[in-house]
Image (cartoon, rainbow, N blue to C red; front, side):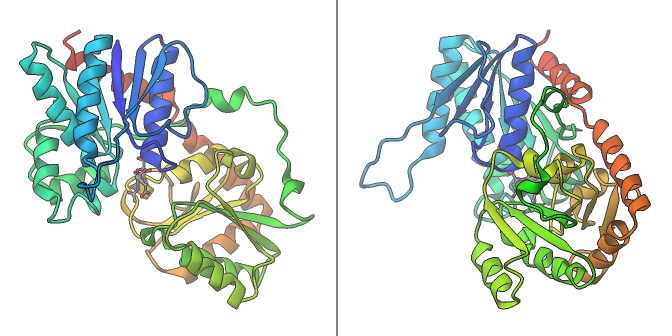
Length: 374
Ligand code: GMT
């Protein structure tokens, strides 16, 4: 098949999933064309079946905001015609589903029939898409996609709750490509960040308010009063300043390392003992799954789709949103008991296995085939 993938090229989970999906499709000899404004951050292993087309918008003084969706739909039409692409798979509704709809209409006028598959990822529904300023357009573009998928049951329910959807929604969970880990020959260097005997706790996010990074620090401070722990904060975003101030004020700066955005999270996760994700909202929680692949138990909030990833009391703990006492207590429970820790680690890995891309990829392929009547 020949597939155009539209996504955000940044460190967010939707871009990561779109990239990994495209790479896996390409390994099965599908021709994949990524169309976005920058090379996606995880698009490292290029092969002959992977193409990247950059959406470039020239500056013009009149524009306060560059009309990205106009340029994107233009690029879609151009690339789809040139490479005879059979379908568009857009990740994150805003503005991708809208731009794809425009492209589809333009192509239709020129005699090309190209279906749209829209995958909803989370904040495009629960936070941004729901704002009155976007809602009607988002609703319209979701309903005008040929196939709609969400990354969890929870997100499907939210989509049906917040929007007026007149089409079937298929849940296709996010996934992990285990072959990436099997091929790795690099050693896991714990001493690279941890001192001897230190327990490592990690958090990864975009530091937006809904990630509740201050909860991460508060939970950590409580655990630290009982255990020899070090916290690694990976990512960047609006609440980073606040987080830095907090660690200085509470004199825990020697025990908290801020690493910024990273493409090498596996190098840290491989020796992490516990992952914290206290989000206000999380449609899936890809970062938690990426930790579980490395046998890292997760203590998180019971927000959105996290309960579809982490099994409470088995591969981690799900606590009420904002309940830092419960999160600290549960973290201590896992970290202070070696046997329990070992058991949770194995369970986390076992759970992650159920999200192996080998099980998930056929679900997307089946939709693609239906879309192009194969
Ligand atoms: O968490 C974010 O704000 C980033 C966002 C994105 O666009 O990447 O993440 C969403 O999509 C991920 C991939 O499907 C999910 O794992 C995240 O849970 C989801 N974030 C939220 O729902 C807040």
